[in-house]
Amino acid sequence: MKVLISNDDGIFSPGIQVLARALSEVAEVLIVAPDVEQSGVGHSITIRRPLRYRRTKLRGLEDIEAYRVDGTPADCVVLGVHNSGQPDVVVSGINIGSNLGYDVTHSGTVAAAIEGTTLGIPSLAFSLRTGEAELDFSHAAEYAKALIPQVAKNGLPDRTLLNVNFPVGKPRGVRLARQSTHSYEDSILMREDPDGVPYYWVAGTPTAEREPDTDYTTVVDGYAAITPLYLDFTHSRYFADLAEFVPGLEPA
Ligand code: MN
Picture (cartoon, rainbow, N blue to C red):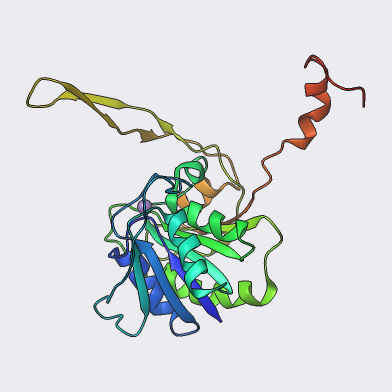
């Protein structure tokens, strides 16, 4: 089993290194990851400048083939597949911070898995919720070691990826969950630079969404949440209502 690992926190993040170490016990692992943090870049790709693909020795992981790219997570997956061929699975993470609700649209972590999915490769994103406790990637990494061979064996449906989020601390269990409407109250901080020119800092505090069975509620309650995401964004059930008012429609 060949596994391509990427992330958006950068190749030197402990999250990707713990994941690679764990998966190397059950798979042939290739790391292709951004050279610096790319959190929040979503599914962007680099098309107006050259990209560099550099062999990288990671301390303690010298036996794992690794490359750093001066681009986005999606760039990394495209280049990794181009240079080394189709892996059996693409795994992105383990991200420092959960990717819940609308986070999946901003997340570079999820985007790397989306890129794998669009290339026809079963793909997963792993994220770890942060809290008071010290970061402990071990539970998510151990679970990845159990889940990924199952995904390689069973495959995933077309256009489908798995978004996996781990809670703070030891999970109470693993649950399937739907995507929440979890978002942020945008709080924009405005400050002034030394020249008196204003600059802005996009912060935001999580909204308190507590619907049952969602990714957000599941992870806040201390469980690992697995959400299958589907890349057909078409809202098919809305076709009939939409046809009631849009002008110039061809008769059905
Ligand atoms: Mn990140």
